[in-house]
Amino acid sequence: MPRITKKSGKSTISFSKNHDYVLIYSKSKSNVFVMKEHIDEGFKYTDEHVDKRGPYKLNQTLDYNTLGYVNSLDFPIQIDGRTFYPGSVNEEEFKLRKSENPKDGFRWRWSKDLVKFGIENEWIVVNEKTGRLYTKTYLKCTIKKTGKDYQIDYFSRTKPMSTLELIENKYSNDNARKELDSFKLEDKFEYPKPSSLIKRLLETYYDESAVILDFFAGSGTTGHAVLELNNDDGGNRSFILCTNNQNNICDNITYPRVQKLINDFGSNLRMYDIGFMPVKDKLYLEYADDLIVHMKDLVEFQYGFTSEKLTKYLILLDDESIKGFLDNINSYNHVEKVFIGINVLLSSESKKLILDRGIDLFIVPDYYYSDF
Image (tube, rainbow, N blue to C red; front, top):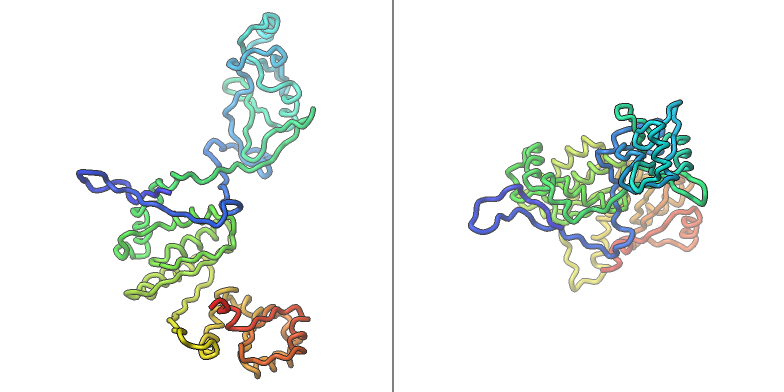
C-alpha cells in the first residue's frame, strides 16, 4: 500500500518523492482482516431509538417525480391529523392527477403497507420548512420485507480499508515528527513513522488480544500505537519491542517514551537485557542449566507479569522446591500451571497428583526450546 511520507518535496528536475510503501503479509486471506464501521457525517440526527438503530440522516424525500408515475403509489398519508399528498399538492390537484394518470408525475416511493409500517415505527418525518415527508436512513438498520410483512433488519455499516487510505497527511513522516516533538525526540530519527499509521494497520486485524512484535524497534512508536488502540476500543493487545540498543537507543529513547505512555494509559512494562548464547558443538545438557536461568523471563513474556497473573504460575527448578510444593499442594488452589526444571525427578504418583488437580505441567527449558 502506498503511504505519504511528506506533503511537498524538494524542487528537482525530475519527480518529487513523496511516498513509500507498506507491505502486508498474511498466511490466509480469510478471517484475518476486519472491516471498520463506517459512519459518514450525514448521520447527525438521533431519536429515542438511537441505542438500537444508531443515528440517522434525512436525505430522501418520500415523494419523487423522476421514477415514473404509478397510480397505486399516489395516495393521501395521514400523520398527526394532517394530510399529505405527493408533490405537496392540494386535494383537488391530487384527484385531477389520479384521474389523468400521467406518464410522469409525483408519487410516493413506498407502498401503502410500507408507509403504514414506517409511521408505526417512526420512520417518516415531516419537514416543517417544506411541508414534505422524509424517510429516515438509520446507521444500524433498515426495513426488510419478509413475505407479506415488514420487519426491522439490524446490521453494521462497514467498509474495507482502501489501498489509498494511507496517503492522508496524518500518516506522514511530517506528522510523526510533530508527535516525537512532544517527547523531545524530534531530531533523533530521520524517517519516523507516526503512531496513527501503526494504529490504523492494527485496527484491520481481528484479534483484539494479539501480541504485536516489533523486532527492530526505534522510538517506541509500535508500543505507543498498541497502548492508544487498547485505550480506544478496550482491547487487550500486548507488544514486544526488540532492539540492539545501538547508541543506547533503548535506554535513552525507547524505554523512557513507552514508560511515559504506560503511566498515562495505566498498563505494565518490563525491560529485559539479554545476550547471545553459543550452542554450536555442545550437547543439550551442557547448556540446559544456562537456559533455565531465563525461565522466569519467558513465563512472564508468555503469560504477562502483573502480580495477579504471576500467582497462577509456579517455576520449580530443583527437588527441594518441588517437594515443598507437593507437601503443601492444598495451599496452591490458585495455581494453574507448573514449570519444572529438566533435572527435577518427578515420580508418577507426584505427576498424577498435580494433573488430577487440573494443573498443567511443563518441563523447562524443553517447553520453550524444544525446536532447537
